[in-house]
Amino acid sequence: MLGEVLRKPDKGKSSGVLFGDHERYVDWDGRSEDPQGSPGGALRRELEAGHSSPITEYTITQTAMKELLLGIFENPVIVYTLLALVPLIFVIPFALFAVWWERKISAHMQDRLGPMRTGGWHGWAQTIADILKLIQKEDIIPSAADRRLFKLAPYIVFAGSYAAYAAIPFSAAYIGSEINIGLFYVIAISSIVVVGLLMAGWASNNKWSLFGAMRSAAQIVSYEIPIALGLLAVVMVAGTFDLQEINRMQSGWFWNWFMFQKFPFLFLAMIVYFVASLAEVNRTPFDIPEAESELVGGYHTEYGGMRFALLFLSEYANMFAVSAVASTVFLGGWNSPFGSFLSGPVLGFFWFLAKGMAFIFVQMWLRWTLPRLRVDQLMYVGWKVLIPFGFVIVFGVGIWTLAVR
Image 1 (tube, rainbow, N blue to C red):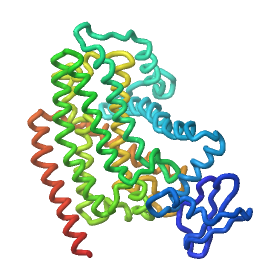
Image 2: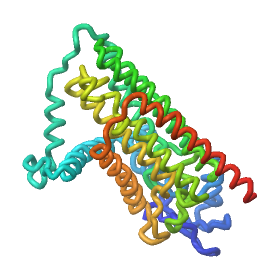
Image 3: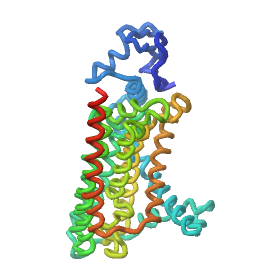
Image 4: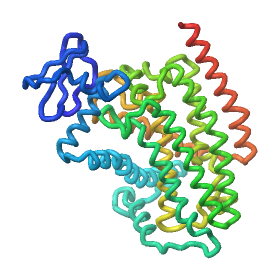
């Protein structure tokens, strides 16, 4: 079976991995054996030839999957295109489900039922009907708008959201790009979103849209600092930016997760990160860029039809991206909380998804629980609460690490 090399076996035992046309058996002392007598040394040495860091069983799993696809399509361009489309295939159904889920959550919190008719059971097809309606709506651009920037802005926003998925490990068998600065890349590339929001607000030639865009820029720039500090604390412990390697370090039972290490510093780092991530994705109580009671709709006031749908899709894609980073960095990512029990490539994706959805549930819960902050309150929380706490956490982890050494 593809990618059965998930855990390091007992010393002296071999693990098999499907590679090319046959199966090679690799032991973890550096030796290998080939049941078909194929010449050419160990699979590990073959893989390490193209990598700057030591190859782990997780890398072999990912490489075996790529080799299988190359054997089927025999064209690396097609293979890497398919691998790049995997997050898109995930994001679109997720956004449709998340909109329906949020409607049901908010309804039950307010003693309502929410959608019940469309599609039958609990109105499951309501968001599908909504997206079909948006696709068919007329494409309207305000006469006074900057047409080029107005059209381009939704694509910039979505590109920044989607690009972040390239370095997020969905399971031991899949990560879009195996880069050793994955966490740094996610933080950096997601900042492109603010460029698209500013572009949308300015190009709309609407004062409410411009106010929303300016608020969004100030908010995202301010709250990127506590996000970076919260993640820096984990990087100091892990010693790497590689998200797949960070996953590997948390393998085993749930008490190996980083949120329980250097307690309470990394647990507080997770809280700081999560609160700041709410502002990063414009969720309540930090949703002032699109405050409907003040700015009509904020930066997307003038957008309708498919362009509005793209901005809406980007918001939910961002929600899962920050939740995926939190689950990977603090909650073990695709690792099973029960050690080797219920682990594997498929079950790993299940655990990764379950942890991410738990964070998203809390985001939705807070939306229907907390009031929206004023602009001055939002800046106060960011600069005078979260950032000082972030520095204390970083210093605490640093002192602890030096003391242990």
